[in-house]
Amino acid sequence: MIYEASQFVFEPTPAVARARRVLIKPAAGCPLPHPITTSLETLRAVVDGIKKNSDADIVILEGTNTGEPVYPIYRKLKFEFPHVLMLDVKDCIWVEVENPLLHPLAVPTFWVPNVVLSSDYLISIAPFQVRNKSGFFTIPNLVSLLPIAKYGGQGASAWKELQQLGMQKVFADLYFTLPFDLGIIDGRKKLTARDDPAKGEVEDYGKIFIGEPYEVDREASQEAGLETEYLALIDSGRSELEIT
Image (cartoon, rainbow, N blue to C red; front, top):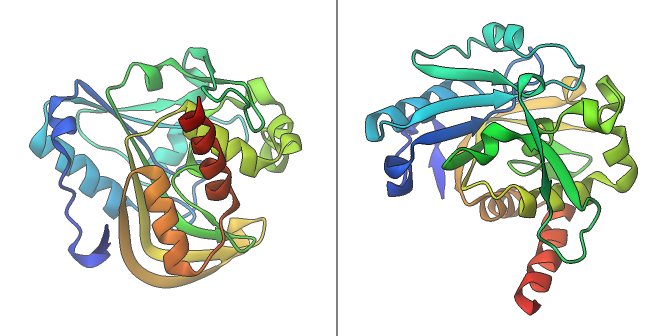
């Protein structure tokens, strides 16, 4: 579903009301404003909506591609909420999780923070970004849940072992391995860039997309007239699961 950003109020599903722990994964890996990162307005709306409809513990989890702590970035972005636990991927215990695909596209197992597995409801909130003429939405947003210590490199070469396998394939494998319940694309502004988002062009967009991560990423891609490769790869993975 698509909402006007100026009127956005987050109304969670009944599954959130039943949850004991809700985990939110924003885009907050660098201290730069929206749309490089998730906007404070949208993140606050989601946190407030959960609190009004649930007694669940709320966890916000993010990591950096530099190996530096994420907490100073949270403060810079003003991501500070009462009674919300703010965590850094690098401080978590990591657990190896198997890709359910019989023939993984790139990665048979992923190392992920154990708090992801112990949460009852998972939300990915990504800014509206077009990189190299492809959508970069709620599913690619999950990559910074992976500890760079396990995948090599920092900065531009972070997760270099995954880059060598093809990031579009990695995104698709993450979709199946980390089944997030909800994707939110924060399109208050739209970013169009090549490789470096900090050097991209920004324009007002004024839309919020909400849905199951694959569905919402597809809707945003169609809205922007994009051919997003990882979505086609997910289609092939879904076909394999249906056959098996």
